[in-house]
Amino acid sequence: MNAFFSLLLLLTLSGCASQQTHWGSNAYHNLSPQRLLHSANKSLHQTQTWLPALGSLVFNLSDLDQQTSDWASRQNPIFGSQSNARRYSDDLRSVLLAETIATALLTPSGNTPSQWLANKSRGISAQLLAGGLAGSSSEHLKDLFQRRRPDGSDKRSYPSGHATTAASYATLTNANLAAFALNPKQRQTISDLNWGLAGGVAWARVEGQKHYPSDVLAGMALGHFVSATLNDFLLGQQDSEHFELHFSASEGNGQLHLRWRFR
Image (cartoon, rainbow, N blue to C red; front, side, top):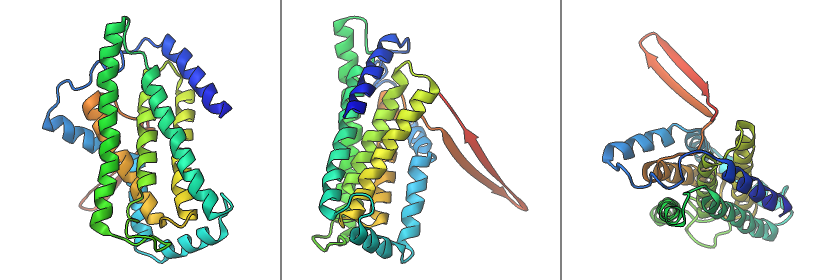
């Protein structure tokens, strides 16, 4: 908890020093189908989308899903018990939600009260829409797939709603970091920490016997993709992506491109 308040203090000071465009001022400007497709394409190629999606596919097509779920819920190597795991999945997700709210409120949004209020209202409404659509997408997919949970309680296992919303909160929080005067190392450290928390939420759901690994990986991919796409489309800024992978092939040869990008 002390670390959380230390982070808020750092962001408050950084926000005061930021000279970037006021957060929220570009929200809902120049919306078009082409821009939506462009935002979706960027999000699709980000590591936080394709890597967990690929992982979910691998677990689904092998015995690892059941084996890992059985081992994790029996051994509880991180959280100690299923009840602890379920509690921590809620607590860690709440921390991520608090970060999203705090960063949205602390971003520099204007020099006058009226300007601040107008920009802040547009920005927050855009992120509420992004996060809300990510969560509702998960709920609709649960109804579609009707996969039974590992504990047999119901048929709403795939994808994980906890993992979806945790990834969504991490994505939106990390996107907001662009509005603060942080150096690349500080921004990357906070971003990695947030994804570590989201990963903790996901793993806690596996240890708590509420989800299979493929469920939580699919949820993380979905949460990031939907939130990053809508954040970029509606708000005009997207989560900083530090790693990209592209593959292209032609007759007789292929090329693999790795690119590191810092902001």
